[in-house]
Length: 163
Image (cartoon, rainbow, N blue to C red; front, side, top):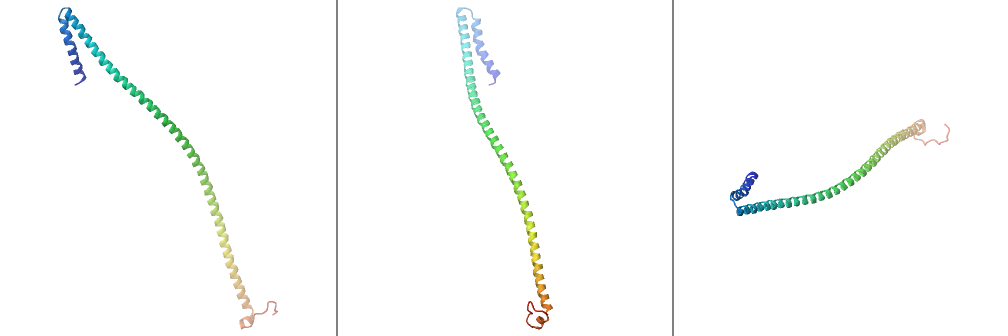
């Protein structure tokens, strides 16, 4: 039933007996009218009290909910502060790691340059060794070729022998 129809029915139930009692004359009718008015007032007061009790329960629940939410909010704020501290610590660590990364990259670059120079020196040493061994072989072959006795099958000339 809609609110308008409900209140219309209540008005008819309250007004009809009051109108009948007001139409009747005499002290008995006036007493009945006063009693009826008292009953209506008490019913309205009971309804109002029930509504106020419901409102008080709702307000009490709301207050406890607000208290609970404030407590949760306090915990959340503490968590946010903790997260901010952890975030700042992680940023400091990231900065330190970035500096270390730069140092490592510089060290690796220096190691590469050192390795390149050492490999280049080693390659030059190998080339020089190859040239020297080739020159030594060439000198031996040249020495053999310059002594005719060696070519004819004679013994090698002595180191200090005059020609």
